[in-house]
Length: 317
Image (cartoon, rainbow, N blue to C red; front, side, top):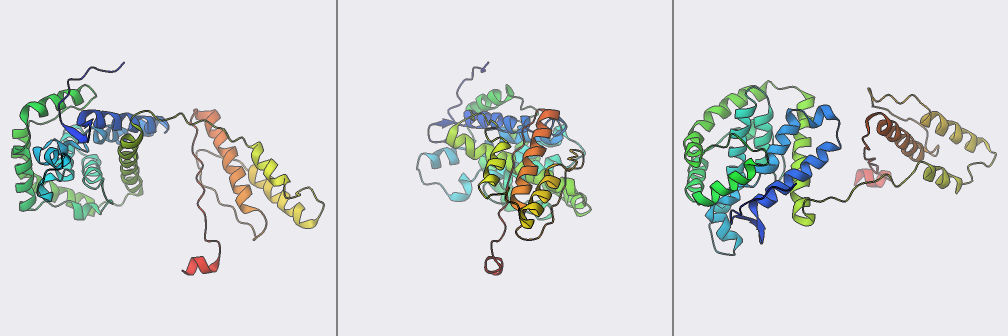
């Protein structure tokens, strides 16, 4: 059941209320998380993803940005919204996750959601000029509209939101917090965190851009391509003709699709000479593995095919 919201009269895009965009982005992120294993969707990463969905554009609440949206001339640096949004994201996550990597991951994700992720060590700085800029932006927010916006987001799980005055005071302590973050991240050597950072970034980028185009309702994704399609495709190439090469191809194909597919250790490689049908065998294996995952977990993973270089000329270009 949709919650009834009082409009804040703040906008993220022309004709789009800011709270509507943030809430719809979070809903899309939740949809993406629901396609993932429970231990990931319900982890600290999943909670962080839901929060950044609601906070990534909070900096658009400034009058600077609202005027910019209407086409009025505003100094570009004053109408930027990512830094303000990233700071409040860090503050909220720091309240929720005292001693883990999520506050910094959330900060970086929001800070760079219109660009590319950077190294955490290089992101963990805030210059005096940036502090002054954020303070100007805070002073430029309509308090009444901000309160309505925050009340609306609170109904969708956003808590521990500081008042604007407390946020303004807290910004001065941010460089000290970043000094500690730099110390932590210099010692960080964890591949899992690397994948977490990229997954969190991908969830926000996908949700944010998708919401602008198709709102909060995604068409359901159904398994419409059965495994039998691969066999029909293979038959077009006269695979049953009795010759030595076809026999070797068939043997390789059968061995590939009948290998023990362990979900617990899901990393496989296929090594065959050129012309033995690696592409079709690998795709068939992926279909079989997806069926097994679907039977055991109810999840329906995507199959992603990465096209390799087609010739040595492409590879050297």
